[in-house]
Image (cartoon, rainbow, N blue to C red):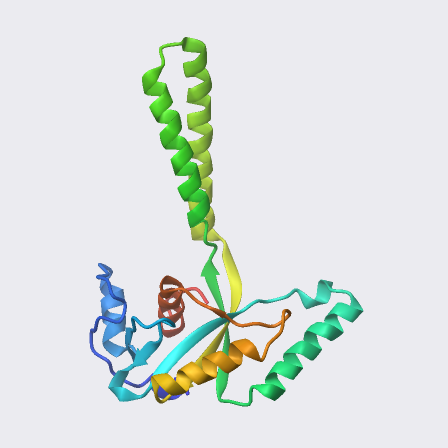
Length: 208
C-alpha cells in the first residue's frame, strides 16, 4: 500500500502543523504522499489526493532470545492469536528513532535553574563552592543526555493501518488495540513521533 503511495505528489502543505527551516525537508514535502496530521483524537494522517487515512501504532518489542522457553511460547502464541483475529490489511515497519531524553533534560534543567538561583542569593564561600560543583555536574549531565539523543537510536516496530474513511479507520484502530492482550497491545503514537517516523521512512538520507 505504501509503495503505491510513494509516487503520489502532495505539494507543500500544513500536515506537520509547524514551519521547518531545513530546505531538504521542504523539498521532501513536495513529494510526500501525506496531506496533514488531523486534529482528531487519534491524530490520523490524511493522505494526499483523497487516498484515505493512515494511523500509526507502536508495537512494543521483546528480546525474545533472552526469554525463557515458556515466555517465548506465550509471546509467539499471543502474536499469532492477534494476527488470526485481526484479519485486515496492515504493514509493520521496523524503524530506528533517537532515544528520547526530553524528560531527563527538562528535569536536569529545572535543577540547574534552582542551583543558579541559590548561587545568586548566597555569599557564603563554602556553600557557593558546593553549588558551583552541583552546577557543573548538572551542566555535564545535560550535555550527556543531549548527546544520547543524537547518537543512540532505538529499534521500534510501527503498525500502519489504512482506512478509506475516518469511520473505517476508527473501527480498525479499535479492533487492533482490543484484540491484543497484556502481552501484545499496540499503542497510540504522539504527533511528534509520527512526524519523525514519516520523515524517516520517506527520506533516504535519514538513518533507518
